[in-house]
Image 1 (cartoon, rainbow, N blue to C red):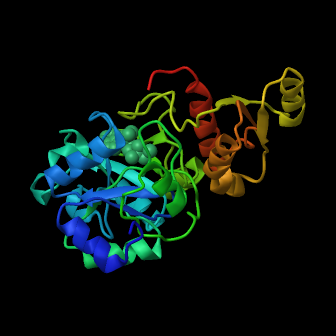
Image 2 (image 1 turned 90 degrees about the vertical axis):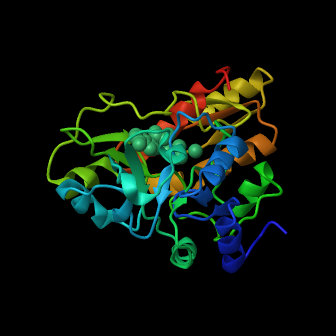
Length: 298
Ligand code: AMP
Ligand code: MG
């Protein structure tokens, strides 16, 4: 039975097993972050290369990372869709598999009542990437998880409220930098820090690829999807569209709509970019990566 209760999930995790967990961003593929074999199993299950470190999920990540003034300021967003890269606390017991042997670690406290309750039952933090095969569209419902991993135990927490991944802020250098746009807008990060961020692109997140978040069909971006779809259909191409809407709603439905278009047999999915700014930047980041995935290896 793939859908499990919280006590069942806690037991599986304590025994070194993997469980899919709901968060406000996307569903995670979680393992005990203090158990090297369990974390290695996450990489194997996803087909994820070891160079893509995992985010540590905890109610309070402070025992696992060295918090400075900036980190304390950004912790105001927790629980919430923001991960911070910080110097790792060596004695914390977090295994090297989580960070790919780095001396820095990405940490966050997820904002989902079910997973917060699960974390409260566990004597260890969880390492969790998204619960999809590497390079594919992230899951925002339990059914999406089971489509990729039919045997995986899943805690069903309903559809994800934010719908795309956390904002990752690197606080290990002299100037804070966003490694990946996500559920907390860059403007909010700047306001909470009280200082400007490093120029985007100065820092590259390990494991961030131009091609990712890819459905089976080809994704193209168009300001006016309707006219592009009409032209493609005239040429005999099965084209479906995903239309622009206010960014929070767009973020919430994007991955589900990409999956639906695949399921409907689209050859091409024509997506309208979100209005720039706020969550729209994260939506457009995912759209660009999905579009870049066509023909890309992996
Ligand atoms: P996800 O792919 O959603 O699981 O998010 C994990 C991403 O966080 C990785 O692919 C990296 O880009 C970033 N990340 C995790 N740990 C670190 C770290 N120690 N240093 C820099 N970036 C990290
Ligand atoms: Mg992912």
